[in-house]
Length: 129
Image (tube, rainbow, N blue to C red; front, side, top):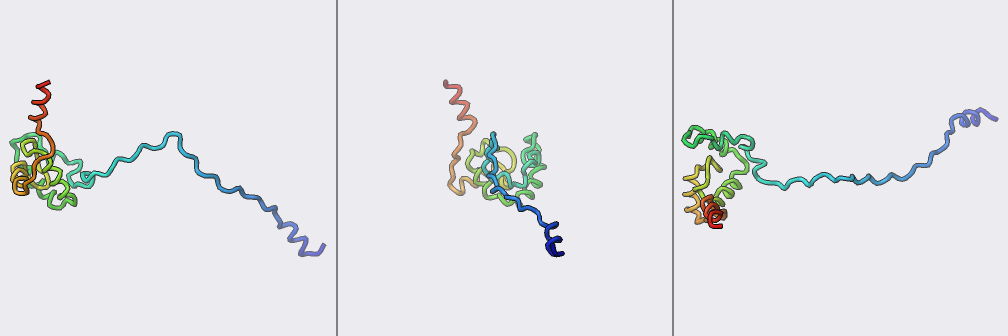
């Protein structure tokens, strides 16, 4: 045997047959569907409800700080549209930088009627049955 054959004979390794990759197994319990996107997920006031909706109705000191936050909020338009879908009489706190009185004036200016029922309407329906 010549030197080359002797060297290559020692180097040779058998070629292993590779199996094609198996498809990934599907989980037995697929993960729950992710929740749909809602504009409030991007609101600057998210997780800061005490700054937007105080416990004490008579305390008005929160309004200026809440409005400052609203001015910089990326979803202010969506927040305003959402707030206008409710009767102003049922609103509390600051929505899109506006107080309930200002929301009522904005709804009148736009000629928008609330789509949602008032709490009084709901209670009167419950009391009738």
